[in-house]
Image 1 (cartoon, rainbow, N blue to C red):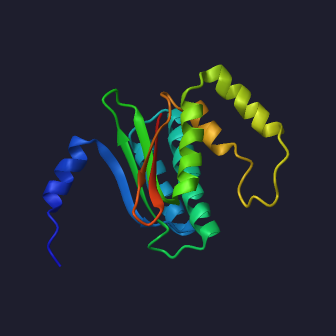
Image 2 (cartoon, helix red, strand yellow):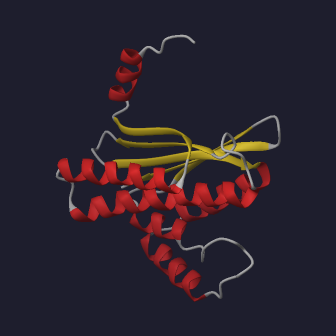
Length: 180
């Protein structure tokens, strides 16, 4: 195995202001451990309580969605892998990003949902949240009430951003970023 150039990796992380990065299969305990490290970092960085709650909430929602999606597909660990990055942008806001494999059709639907939410203002997002909250939950869907993505969009300081990179096997790599 080739030796990793950790110095170059560190320089890349520093240049992109990456505070935390994970790549691999997400288990419940791993989500908790990374969450604990994230909370500790936010506390030591004297992040405001509201920003800390929003960053942590976005991280939890995104990673749990990835985990639940992979489980619903019955995927092996290597297929259920995710990349999660917490960084700071040029305005010193937190950016929570996560990406994972999805079936191509699922990625198209998800990308359309994210783009629709990104086009809404705060009032429209609040209305969408209340509307979704009142909808009867489909017990057969195997997922939550559909509030998580709307809630992330409501807490975001900028519109949600996503990308979908098609892969040769009919799957795609979906990436979502939220600025807090």
